[in-house]
Image 1 (cartoon, each protein chain N blue to C red):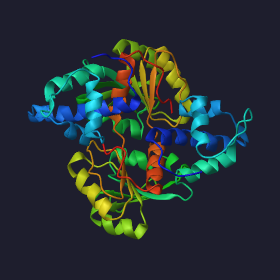
Image 2: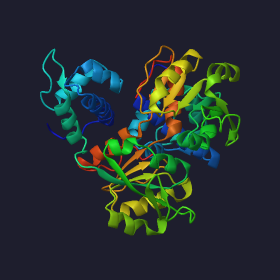
Image 3: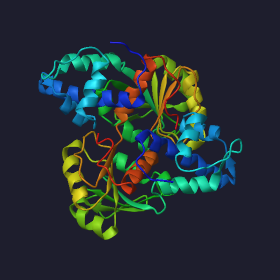
Image 4: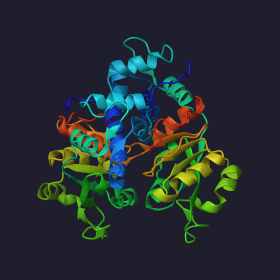
Length: 216
Length: 216
């Protein structure tokens, strides 16, 4: 049951298993097969067994995995035992779409504020979430205990705002901007580059169109 | 210069190198170091050299890589020598945000139509792109030669619409829905699950917060 470092791709698979386990737990299911978990994470049953064997002896041969204990263990491994407090920086169209993304709450991420430069938006609520002035970024992050930021600002100010987020104590940034952010000690950064995903599709199609690396 | 199958993570790195090469080419740069490419793709110079060595003998020891020839080779490898014709299915907030995403065009993806069920939207244009009725999905895809679809519909109709896209001849789907799509022969699927990325951030933070798997 160690929490040693595991690869990004394994973390993605564990997220996929967790999503399926949450769904099954809500339905009242008690046991799940490695094949069902594999389908959800777009991997193989053998890979599921290999991944989960690293976290102790879940599941009995031929009997599958117990849904609730395995869910709770994955919640623990992924650091989701308490909700993360997050903000969206940039309340444009993408930011606004993300503010309405109901999966955040279900998955353990509480969006507590949005930040923008637009005086028309500042002081209003979008999807019940207050839009605050980017001028108050540092103080609001500290006051509200914000730990994660979803960055959807334009390229121009992206790096400067990421630096300010890091200075203010944010520990993780999900980067939707087209800008590569500078690495900062103590701040984890993940990029969501939509064009990179499309290029991945393009590659798969021209090389023979295997049916999807990740159907999730 | 083969186009044999390479891993998803390598395809992502090649996309990162390509993004940097396009930027440098526009600036008129002629040579780039493996370290500069590594920074852009959030990897190491050694990994860059290893990746690129698989596609022939680019670059000379100590001299770096020629920007334009390497860019053109990566464009070829990733299947981007001609633009892909794409549509956005679901013109809600996320779909609308994507219709305005200017990087699509620059990266070789031409969004030629959006589809929705909302009579208020059908027949209008958003960001200069016509919104068509989802009832006409199959005929419009064929008429307009659409090859890729970006799926942003709700969970309810997601699988059925993905099946219709596949039937109509779409070869790749970028799936923004929370629904795992069924694999179909000849159709590549990639998922963009924002909560999975946040869970990846959470894991990195609780295990010590390395400064970002992918700063892109």
